[in-house]
Amino acid sequence: MAHQNISLEEGLELQCGQHIAPLEIAYQTYGKLSPARDNAILVCHALTGDQYVADPHPFTGKPGWWARMVGPGLPIDTDRFFVICPNVLGGCMGSTGPLSIRPDTGKPWGKDFPPITMHDIVAAQVTLIDHIGIGRLFAVIGASMGGMQVLTWAADYPERVFAAMPIATSPYQSAQNIAFNEVSRQAIFADPEWHGGDYRAFDTLPARGLGVARMMAHITYLSEEALTRKFGRRIREVSTSSSHKEGSSFFFGEMFEVESYLRHQGSTFVRRFDANSYLSITRAMDYFDLAAEYDGDLVIPFRDSTTRFCVISFSSDWLFPTSQSRHLVKALNKAGANVSFVEIDSDRGHDAFLLEEPDFDRTMRGFLNGAAEHAGFPQGGHHAR
Image (cartoon, rainbow, N blue to C red; front, side):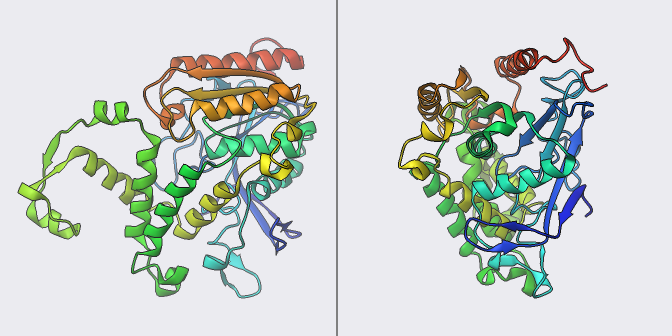
């Protein structure tokens, strides 16, 4: 499938020491770039997201993953801002990753794709921004793994980020989250179709393992309250034939609705995501620890930063809990940064950033409008015209 992309023959030097070339970055844009090129917002997607933030997804046909947030008149207003959303390095929707052809072999990288870090992912995005001709981004916004990218932008390229909004994220990957990711990876490794990572050479996919990985991850995205409200202990009938086909035996020919939901999440995910990409990106998340790179001092990478920060957490998020956001805010305050912090009261868990949360929408709109006023943007929309 063709995606909007750039291809740079010079490639990119990775933190691991390997050079990857050519470098391809797939992306989508929305709105218009102002004549002064000062109204660009970079939206960074989460682990299983992609560049189709506001467009229907080309594989699933579903609305963009943040279509409720990005668009004309919406909190990230494309009548006012030029929005760029790239597929991350290591991804499987057009950016260089395990599915890309390796020049020296003529075959996909597959399991041999080099290890990447959040710094590599952001460095690849910098090449895209340079290609478009943008010197400084008005804002970088992202949630979950996207928030890790936001913090990396602010730490590595502070002079190129006017405003930063890290949402439902952390300046490090916790031991608990590393553990969840490892269970997911082991599910993929245990799939008989894994073939040591060379599954495409066997014209197959480790679909069951990847599906279980998705199921495992999805549980962490929701809160107990959200699961109970949506499914409770409701049971649905299943036929004996379908039970046998799915490789499980259900007592009394029944299954809980939450089981059916998770199976659906797993089966739809494997149609749009590559297992080796999943492994590569989850490891990049696990490596992430900004303070560790500065002798454990999170203040140092943000010292005297001129970037305006708005840190957002959700009260029921146990994957990236509010305590981690507070830890970040404390470091930003010590660094002398301009920072505001909002904890959104929600019982929807980590995925609340994707759902209808009026307080979140108001916070997003208010911060961007305030930052735009500080930057000297005209009131209202149409700054790009």
